[in-house]
Length: 282
Image (tube, rainbow, N blue to C red):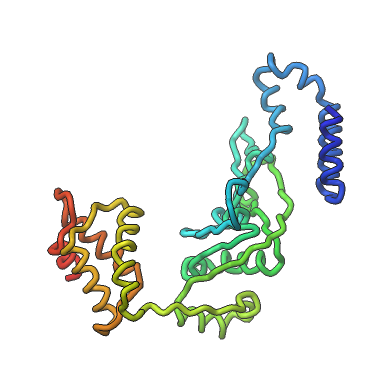
């Protein structure tokens, strides 16, 4: 067995934390060698003891061809920073390293995290913790959910994970201005501002891509197809939102809302027609 460890000793010899872990793992294996000898016939508590040697791979990006891109739809302390799941055993809350679950910040390491500013700002404490994570380049899994309980518990306190991520905040002009004026850390953390024009000129590319975009929305939403008249009415609606006959609005939220409502009006039919789109717009 030790010759197998030698491979990792050589590979991670420049990582002090990895070397320390491997040394401690060797000592634990020697200390519990009887556990391995009884592995096949062991039952009950022995299986629980075996968990100490089980790996918990909280993030696996090995199948990705490029950098990870994570869109966090519902940001919270648990979804962003990860969580530790506790179980009740004989009146005591218990957790070990296998109870650790990753958050979006862990999954986005080395890549990009996309998040709406309005969702993040709904919880000031979350916004403050999010800024600190970016500022210090560390992700710490919070344990306050158990510490506030009036129950005895046995848990773990994971070390902070180094954070290397590009954060893309999506928001409107007013939110940007308010944060720039009233949050002294905002401009220091988010230095690049990219504006997205919600209205574009009508050209051949728009005529070609609009039906494809609508088709993608239908597939993602699980909605039935539109006939030609429905697609035409939807296109007219997008032009109307732009305020000009020579332009079209590309704010997909409004388009999706109309499609969803039209889908409800077309209940019992196999396809969404133009009259359903008109009714949804009204």
